[in-house]
Structure formats: C-alpha cells, structure tokens
Amino acid sequence: MTDGGAVLPWLVIRQDEGGNRYRVGRYATRAEAERVADRLGTRGHQQLYVVEKADRAAT
Image 1 (spheres, rainbow, N blue to C red):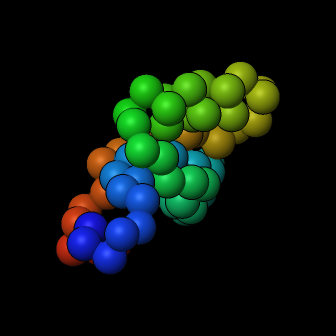
Image 2 (cartoon, one colour; image 1 turned 45 degrees about the horizontal axis):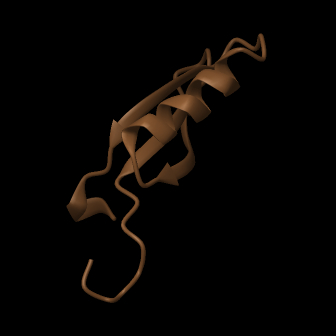
C-alpha cells in the first residue's frame, strides 16, 4: 500500500457447514492470523476457520 495505511495481507475466513464464507479479520502476519483461527476453532462450533493470503487485486 502506498497510502500510508497498515498492510494486513492475511485473512481469517470462517466457512460454515453450508459452504458460506465470511471474512473474520485481517492480520499483518500469518502467525497472528493462525493464532486467531486456532483460538476460534477451539470454541466447539461446526465452522471451519482458515487462513488465506489476500489477493492484492481484491483489497
């Protein structure tokens, strides 16, 4: 980014049992995103939390 804003290229995505996907948050590092996804995944719900790198064209 050239506008002085923070670069947050890592996404945590929640996918429910119906296949619907929702962005939960954006993070600066993969490790940070994985910690969040792991913490959310331990709550016992049926959702799947995955970490993905953002597509620069989609941001």
